[in-house]
View 1 (cartoon, rainbow, N blue to C red):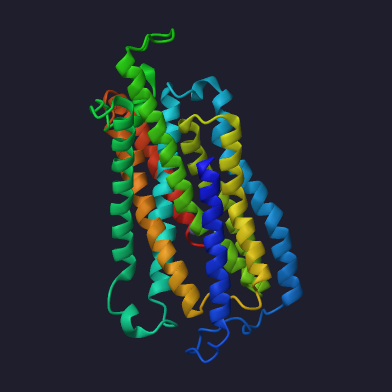
View 2: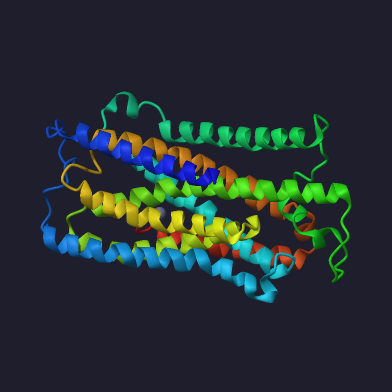
Length: 359
Ligand SMILES: [Zn+2]
């Protein structure tokens, strides 16, 4: 249940930062031109905007649930069991989606926020803060990753290092990857079983880290839609966000699948992913009088959070998901499967990149 408290913490943090920026927003009416978009535009229509936003909440919720559950239900399809080739392809697709979320959604958003003309030129245009924060965040993710592994290993063996196939934690979780394709339940040695446990624990850490990386973007896109009073931009945005969340949900769902959680924990993860964007929309509606995307506080807080997420997502997608699988024994031993998995990565990354046109 650590992740539940963790998610609550994140949401509280975002809530807090929103209220801080709401408070900080009031005296900033004399910002540069174009920085106060709230009461302008030919399409300004409060009641119509509110109607659309209220419709958007359940619609986005449902499409998120569908997206994240789709890979989870694939469990009942025999061809998609973790030891099958198709599972590897589905996972490659999911990893591609996560990678594109980092590079194509979160990182450019952070650039937009932190280089906005609404921020003072000093120091914001004098140093590439976005890439710097993303880099530090990637290093911190690596540190967390390796220290956690070391901690668990030490706990397990009382100081002696366990020989774990670190290069392929996912494949270690799949017993058949070690064997020769025999059908019955493989007889596992003690070491092998321990390696499997470590791999499973790692997979679980990865899923929680991924949710953390995704949650910021999901809340922020909901928040800016919720705060908008412009039906002309909200209308296409509702459809875009539905697809956005469905696709991203498929990426996350593919990773939840391999963590082999129990039903209850899966439900918690699904719930938190699906509610983040609707929560953002509701928060945006509630704060629409005070919140503005272009207030300096909002730009700085959201920009920094986005840069942190970007580093985390890029590291996790490349190192923990893609490299782990493609360098692992299963894909290294099968060139055909490797090509299919590359096609899946390109499809996932391409689809998610396409969606960055809207949100
Ligand atoms: Zn996005």
